Length: 300
Image 1 (cartoon, rainbow, N blue to C red):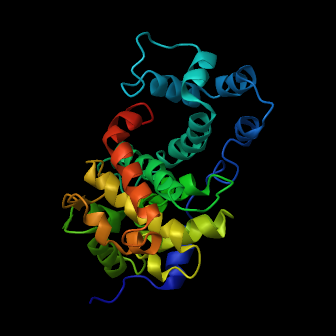
Image 2 (image 1 turned 180 degrees about the vertical axis):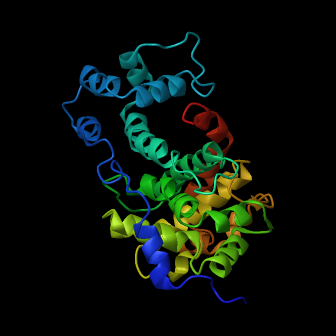
């Protein structure tokens, strides 16, 4: 195997030079507090949404997407909140500032524009399915960690666009058989794969241990020292989203065959071969997967 191009010290230095995301740590705090409050009302939530044109546009696009199948177009924010529900609003509030800020990252060499929309469709799809997968387990998750680990699992690729643009361009134009091959090539070119790069970046942003480790180990979840279930759920969700045809755009990987995720390391971390949780998970997947493209059509 070729010797890695950069030392750990240089990699860390380049990651530290990557622009910070001001909203990543708080993620629209005022809206989240309102949405999570039992006493909140639609008018209060709508007032905050109106302050953010990007969030407003994404909210209305989402409610008017094919997925919701409304007979008449919705242009009123409070009406949109009624149709979507508080959970969808909370997820939208988390995704929007991260998408807007990261999508502004560009390679420093002025090469062809990167497929940001494809990357975020894949990231949002992974977030949605990670949450569905974890719901089948007998655990309680009180915050939005189950959604955020999926949303942010490929943040390392965004950092690479700023910190390692030449290497990323090589990766984008190369064909691979599996996601594991992508990681191996990243290590050859840079020294770390996108999971480790993303984890260091998120750690710098004071994200929780669960999120940092899920991002770092989402391609080899059994190796995670803690919180394996989050990394495992992301690996399975990532494979499912690719199977649905939402590939991410940042690398060329062969199509994912149906049920191949049952052989993944992450699947075996999460489920026994024939337990009740396995049946619930498969039912949730069978229900969510056909609807995923329509769900994303209003978000991206």
